[in-house]
Length: 114
Image 1 (cartoon, helix red, strand yellow):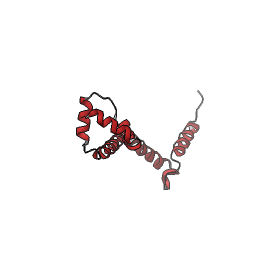
Image 2: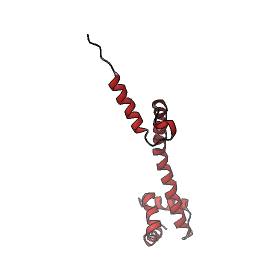
Image 3: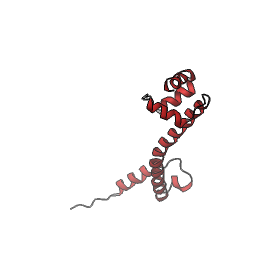
């Protein structure tokens, strides 16, 4: 049986790692071991933060809605409770956008809820 050298695959793997680590500082962009470790940590952070982003946006929407409700003398929790009782199904993202960009429409929703 003939001998097969595995050099091309190793080079291809190394080149792929270094290509993905482009733009990293110091040895992380040029040295294979450091680049591989940096990519592993970057992957973990990206995975975690994709989930964290959803929580941060929900918090932001709540803050925007609450700020708009204060002008009408309402609190966020009372408004959400009234929304549920009136069976209006509007999500927080939409409410936040209405509160920020279209206050008149948001005022009409508040009147309907009360």
